[in-house]
Length: 482
Image (cartoon, rainbow, N blue to C red; front, side, top):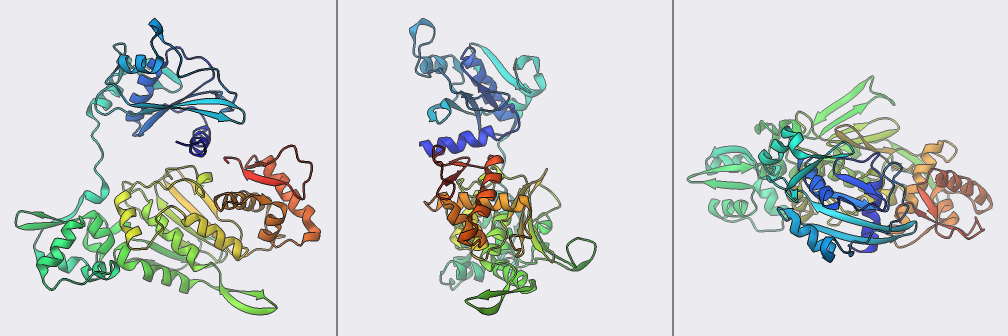
C-alpha cells in the first residue's frame, strides 16, 4: 500500500465512532501484541470482517493521531526479530501485514490482520477475543468460540440457484438470451446448443445431468419477467412518484418487470420522462432542461443495483421522485464511509454482478461514477447530492436547482467538501475562485466564498493546503483525508 492508500485506510478506521471489536487503537504500549493479533483475527471472523486492525499512534478515545515510538522492526524476547517471533507463536500462523505511515501529526504503525476461518487463532497456546473494547480469553466465551468453529463461508448470491430442474426450452423461455448476445456484441448462435453453451460459460445457467438451473446472476440480469423467480421478485426496482415534497399523496407507483441488464435503459428513460423541466438562462437564451442530468441518474441507479445487500429480504432498490428532489435507495449499509464515496476504490458485495454490468457498459469499471454525478451537479449548479447511511439501507438524494441564497448552511458545507474531493481526484486543488465558479459567485463577492470556506473548515471536512499562508483569496484547500 502506498502513502495515499494508507492515509485513506487510516481515515476510514478513525471515522468509526468508537473502537470496534475488530479495531484496536494504541499509542506506544506494545505489550501483549501477540494476544491482540489473536483477539482481532478471531473477532474479525465473528463479525464477518475480512481483516482486523491494530493501529499504533492513535488515541483510543478521541481517535486523534498523536504519533508513536513503537517500531515493528524491534526485537522480541531472546533478541529475536518481533515479526517472525509473533508468526512463530501464532497458531494457525495467520497472515498479517504491517505498514508505517509518516502522518502529518506523527508516525503511525498499522497492522492489518487476516480474519481466521473455522479455527480460533491462539498465541502461546491461548486464544483471545475482543469483548467491547476489552481483550479477553476466548475460552471464557464458548458461544463466540463456537461461532468461529461453525461459521461457514458465505455463498455468493450470484452463484445461488434461482430456478432449477428446467429443460432447455424452459430456460430459453425464462431468459432474454437475445439481449445478452446483443449487449455483448456477439452473434446469436444458430442452434440451442450454442446458446446454452455460452450461457453456461457465463455462469448464467448450470447443467445438472440432463436438466438445467438458472443462477441468481442469470435471473437478476436477464429475466424476461422477474416475478417468474420467486426468491427474486421483491428485488425488482420500484419507482414511486409523489405529489409535492412529502409522501402524503402518491401519483404513481411501478415496479420493474425485467432483469436489471435488459431493463436498465428502459428504467432510466422512464424516470427521465417523469421529471419536470427547469428553465435556465444560458448565454442570454432561455431553454428548458430536465430537473436532473440524465447521466447522474444513470450512474446512481446503477450503483443502487450493484451495491445492494441481497440478504436483506423483502426489499429492493427504490427510486422516489418528489417535486424538489429524487431519492435513490438500496438495501444494505454501505461498505465504505459515505464521506469517502468520491475517492475510495469501489467495493461491492456482489462482485460478479458488478463485473458483468461493467462488461455490459452499464456502470463504470473503476468507481468513477460518483465523480461523474458530482461533475454533473456542479455543471448545472445543482445543490450537492447527499449520501445517507441508514440502519439497513443506503440512500442518495439529488436536489433540484436552488440559488445560493436558497441553500442552507448544510447545503453549502456539503457542496464545498464534495467540491474539494472532486478537485483532488481530478488532480487539482480547491481555491476561493474554484468555489466561486461552483456556486456562480461573482469575483467581487469573493468574501462570500471565504465565509462558506470558513464554515467548512470549522466542520473539519476540509483543511488548509498551506496553513502558513495568510491569503484567503488565494489559499488552497484539501478534503480532510488528503
